[in-house]
Amino acid sequence: MNASHRCRLAAGLVSGICWFQSGGNLDCHAEEALNAPESARTVESARFIDHSLLISSEYPCNWPTYPFPKFQIVHQNGIGAVSPYHIDSLYVDGNTGTQLDTPPHSVARPELKREKSGPLGLAYTDKIEPWQFGGEACVVDVRDLLDQAPKGVSPLVTPAYLEKFEAAHRKLKFGDVVLFRSDYSDRYYRPLPEGNRFINDVVDKKAPGYPDPNPDTMEWLGKRGVLSLGTDSASMGPMPDLAEPTHFAGLKYGMIWTEGATGLGALPDTGAFYCFLGPKHEGGPYGEGRAFSIVGGSLPGRLIDACTNKRAIDLSPTLTPRFPMTNPGQSTGEHRQVYLKIDFLYSDYLDMWHHGHMMDSMAGTHLVPPSYALPPEGVTPAYSPEVRVWLDEYEKKYGKRGTSSRTTESVPLEWTCGDVRVIDVRPLMGSTDRGSWPASPEITVEWIKKYEASSGGLNAGEVVLFQSGYIDRYLKMAPDTQGNFGAGLWSDAYTRKGEGWPALGPHTVKYLSQKGIRCVATDAPDLGGVDPKRALMTYWALGSHDMVGVEYLSNLDRIPKSGGYFLFAPLKIQDCHGGPGRAIVLY
Figure (tube, rainbow, N blue to C red):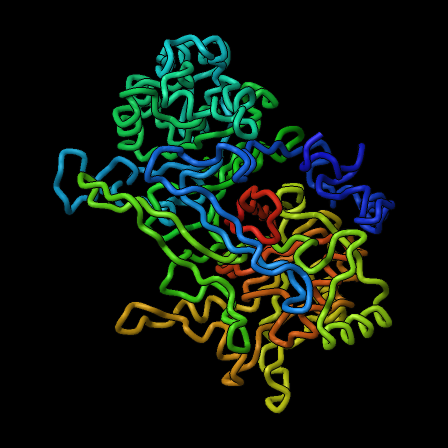
């Protein structure tokens, strides 16, 4: 049983409520869900299926030829005297793990005026409309092609496979996500050196290539209006010499597609909702990400309808070196790894550098897993004297601080997705005394209850978003002469130029946990606020209640008052204590 399934209640509960806390006992989430009204159970039988490859240096997660760089995770700090948090730094290339291609991968920019130029040459990962990331999964069975080719050569998926699918089901159309299922990644994505069979042995002509569509198949789908595809092969480009023709044949229609999906055999031929979400890199022609699907009940149809009718809102600010994407720290030397774009290979035809990114694992929109501030079971951190005092105070007020080994890859996807509730905390701004700065207004239990009195009680499994407008305000700032903007996002509060952003306290975390809430999110830089003591207590409380956070959102004012469904998925990185990703709302 995989991580996205092992914490689900056996029956009758909302997806996203689980049996176990870190300690392994039936927790308040499960108790609350058992008593939840029927209206609170969005789709009782809906379940999530993860289609993402594990990103790890132990696996063949990168395109292996020179000079494509290799994935790296650096555990810069463990919980201890230097920091009370696990802090990770990442280097990730867009060709890592399960990944997305967009038109500029093959379509040149219009101003270049080349044979393959066009407006879609500007449709980078940060420009794709969020509705295009999802749709109805249409699984085309091509398993009979697996390993049916000479070494180094891909067996080709021809239009005949699509005609066979249509004969058995229905015509393919706009809003569908056509998925080519060969079971290639299921069979060959393994730890190295066994994992050499995934890509390396194909490139070296030691093994047959992965099945892939030929250019005619892409043309066939493009004329049908299909704009989203996926494959469980390592690439959508047939080896050895049809990769670029196939790419251009589809991308010129404005298609996007998933490469390196897995587990497609868990899907029905039609009817499931499929989605790909990945970090929103500025100017990215491709990007790493997370693919998943939802099957069962009425929820898939609801989300498919939203995507088909383009009812989607992007909640993630664009990742760019020109805006402060990571915490600069309150004191010298405390800053997190800054977000950097790193060029490594120039394409003359596209006049574009292939590039990757170095960043903190909490750059931009990201996940906060329980293990971010909690040590594993049996480990006693060597906290600094100051933090030891804080811990003693915390445990006297709120009970024992918990432990957790729940890193990002083991957080179930259903925990970070659900019916959305937006709580407006903008009126809290200006409520702190200037003499107490740096300080953040506290989102109290009373504030939550006030919201519930006017908008209805919170239900188990919902995702609670706190709207402060804080990041939006800085995003609207005019750039300086170097094109940089929003410089005071963190520093204005740290240096007492302004008030901090509204933040949770441990009492509020406990209350939300008792309501059956698994995931809380904010359009501020973080959930903890600018006071380091209270922030740490907030993260201790979140982790100890086995809750997760999503931080650094925007555009919450665009979410409708009812009917919205929140989707967030972090990169599936092994042993990571953060996780960049993208958040959207379908309605």
